[in-house]
Every structure is written in C-alpha cells, then in structure tokens.
Image (tube, rainbow, N blue to C red; front, side, top):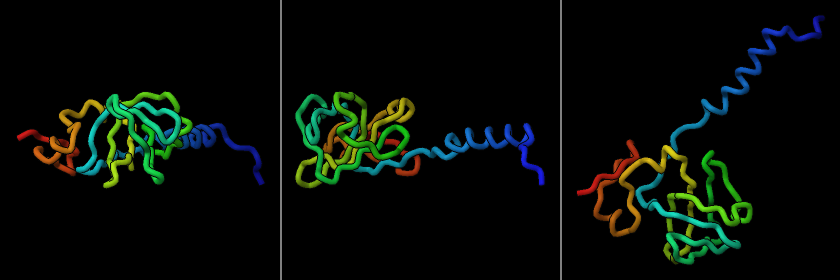
Length: 130
C-alpha cells in the first residue's frame, strides 16, 4: 500500500481547492425593491443611510461582498455602497454590500419614487429610465 502522495496529485488537488471558491461565486440577483445608498454602520442596530439615522430591523440580513452573512457588530464604523430593502415599518431589512462591479451598474434607483418610475429587468439586473 502506497502511503506517500505523488507531487503531481498534490499539486492538482491544490489547484482544484484554490479554483473552487472563484468558480462558486455567481452574480447576485437583487429584487426590484432594492434601492442603492451609502451606509455607515454604527452601534447596532443604529446605522446612517445616506446621511440620515436609520435602524436595522430585528431580523435584518447583511450580506458582504462575498454574499456571506455579516454581523452588524463586526461592521462598526464601516462605510459602504449598498443595496437595501426597507420593511413596511420603516426599518432596514436586507442589506447587500456591493462589489466594485455591482456598484458600477448604472443607473440604480436611490428612492422608492425612482424605482416606481423606472423599469427593472430582473434577468439583466439593470434599470432603465423612462
């Protein structure tokens, strides 16, 4: 029984292990209700959204650039461009911290009035102004 690993097999396993995370990242799909803004995380549940004080909902989900859930306490004093949704009571429910490529997609509505007036293509994840 051969117990040592051949160098070529070890190298191949290393390449596959390093390539899997990059291949696993897929583009994120945002809902049509998602708005874009600048968010600064303060002491949870407090945040500053577009320069105005806001609160995170009790069940708020914050997704980082890698789409993994982030805890609001770990993001203290972080400023980021985000997409977000607001629940009916006015609290932030979903937050997606954008990558540079996602932030480069223009235009994206900054207010609910813009989102109602513009057209959203969910397949392409783009907005068009009328």
